[in-house]
Every structure is written in structure tokens, then in C-alpha cells.
Length: 145
Image (cartoon, rainbow, N blue to C red; front, top):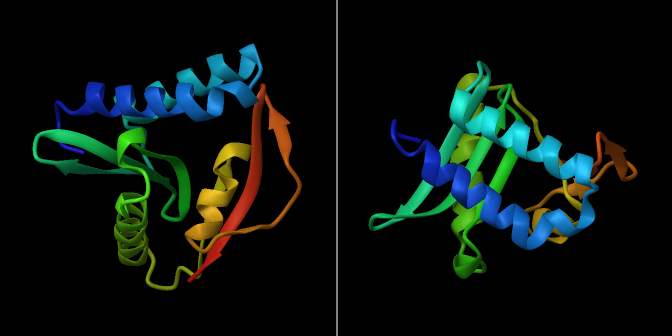
């Protein structure tokens, strides 16, 4: 993500969240997700690496990796689903993970219930039961490299 793209990236995240994920969260979860997403995108905390995909001048996808191997945020513009944008973002993210740690063997994610089939198509498997923390429902998943 280049400086100055933060607002557009956050708008993409929140549009995808509102469209697909929000219905599965409590009011507390919606507030917590919004707070976390703003922090990850706007504050760019240490340990986070944020990748974006653009088509022309239009932002169409984003992926935030935390601590070299955990997907913290992953959204593709709804009008661009099914075109390989997410798969390409994930492949680039894995390349970056391997730069940080050449011995990395897994990438993890805490998927929303809605996104579990998406992650499965990308090679992730469910590794534990769904849980809820601060109103955010998630399913732990892993992709072995």
C-alpha cells in the first residue's frame, strides 16, 4: 500500500465487511472489527504488511499479513470476485512471508464464517471450532506451504 491509499483501502475493507460479514457479527463485533480495521490500515502497526491490487486507478483488493504468516484482513471488491485477484494477492503475500522467514511452513487465518469456503478454495483447511471474541465470530484455518 502506497502512502495516501489508506482511505481507499479502508473503504474497500468496510464495503466488503458490510456486504458479507456484518450479518454474522453482534453489535459489539461490528464495532470491534471497525476499530481493528482502522488501526491496521490507518495506523500500520509494527508487524503488519499490507498488499493491494489495483486495476488502472481503481483499488480492487487488499491483504494484510501480521507477524509474517497470519492473514489479518483479506478483501476483494465485490464486483471483482471470481477473477483470481484474491488468489494472486495470497500468492504475493506468501512470497513476502518467505522473505521474512524462509522456513515458514504455514499461513494462518481466522476466517469469518462467510469466508470459510473462499479460504478453502485457496487451499486452507479448518483446524478448530468456530469461536467468538468481542462479538467477532471466527473459524481458525491454516494453509500448509
